[in-house]
Length: 256
Image (cartoon, rainbow, N blue to C red; front, side):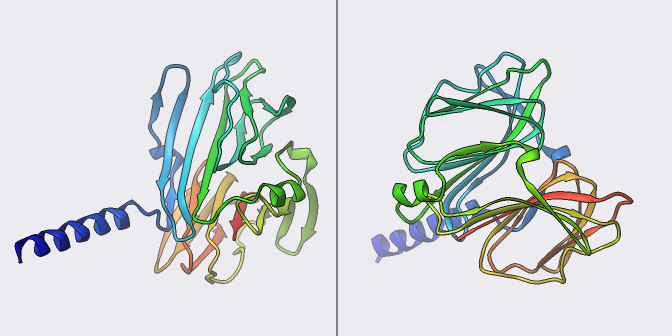
């Protein structure tokens, strides 16, 4: 009986560790991030672990000094990487093609594509790195049909006005890992709520670019401000209200 009990106990411990490692709905506040340094780069860990739809989601902030390169050219075999620039200018090179993007600029890197990031400006470059691993196999052909890897600047995103403010469409497409990946920027007028409290199967990431917000996370609320990243887990009740006196501007990302 003892070996059986020992096995059950071990499995229970492993399951508990797996559950503790999953990412749940949360506001990751910019003020709480801790700056660390490796051999060449300053970085801040935001989140790292499995979610309901991903085998792993790794989010970091990189601070890159002028003239510095984050890493030599490399490719991730089974991961997609999304870059969002917060400050400064970043040279994104993918398969030999270079594009410089500034604040609000975005790059999406497909699995297998060699890429590198360099600060070619005169000021610090600060950017978010979101790396996705899925439980389903990659489909390189689908990713190429969706447009492949790309990098675009803030001015590239089309703007549509609505009764609550503005919406900038960044992309809505197939990728190598996802049947659908959609990203836009919302500019929400002061005092307004993005939408009534609701939930959906898709997980969602919100990155606050400007302004102040009150975020509904299930049964509780939490303040958020510029630089903060918000994760809404699958099926969790959520909404966002602009509590400031200026437009609340934020990236919104979903995948399936």
